[in-house]
Image 1 (cartoon, rainbow, N blue to C red):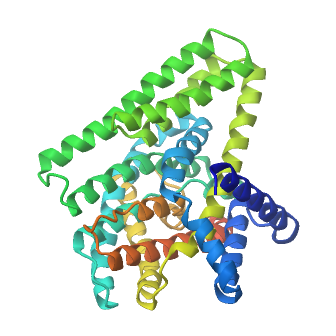
Image 2: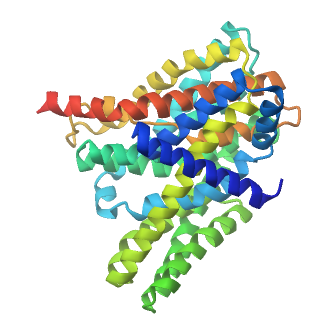
Image 3: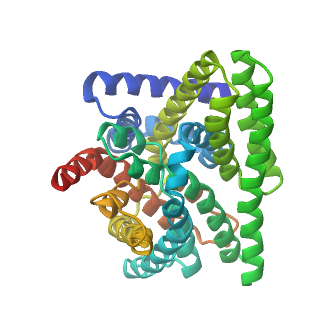
Length: 416
């Protein structure tokens, strides 16, 4: 099947599922598409004929989820998300965001990794400790996709919305770097010395931030020197595609580069380099890109059930790890509150909202599907990590995503 055939089928399914959700279920679009896709996948697995199941399995198996998300979708989604973040608000929350996206992510990685090692052992699955840490690194980054619309509708304080948005944008980039370092160590391809790991981390993260600033400024200068919204939208599109590929080819953090570039264009560029007409068309263009890619991403997550080996042991471990991931998240988000509470005030229920609002999504699934198949990780252990990741992500999106608004509303009422 050609690329255009695959794209046509996915876009058609996303449109049909989105229509059904809007007319019948009225859930947030991304979550509705995910649940409908998941439901149909389960029905095909349980009741579909052999030929139908094989056709569905063959179609899903040929989609490279990791490349689709990490090399195509992620750059657009992160840029679109950063484009609407107010840099002044982010600057006010910089220490909270920095701690959550760095120290908090590393703490969560080691807590989840250590706990998962013993849980896998208890359920009869042999997953080496370093690969358990890899699991901790891929499941710790939060996903801004499903939560932002819910936060706005729930009337959450602006400071809290900025914390969640800023953390999810930056910890995606940091999380990918931590994941790559741990995979290199687990597969024996990476020097385990502190100096070597630190050097790689500084180059990936620092280089990504620097490159994002450079290409973002170049795009800003080009936007400032013309007034033609068609060309200006094209410049931002080139910034995302070209900048991300440049970062990848230089082994720098593409996600962080896109976040920095998006912040620059969305703030300085919006204020000083765009006319009202350009702002309007640029916002509409990137909102549409964001919505379409989100719909496709959540559809893909719902369909990925076909490529997993659903053993009872792995499923049991995944269910237990839901609680572990939430507990680790609560400990991690408590760090900035404990460290900064003497210097600043926090919104009521901030730890509980940050914990429940830390949704996992497509990036976690993509990183899990990117685990090596070269023999450095046994296939049984790889499938255990895949299933556990999928179970945690589905719970996060379906349960946490759908209950986040009432949780926030209840906490806001009790505080008021």
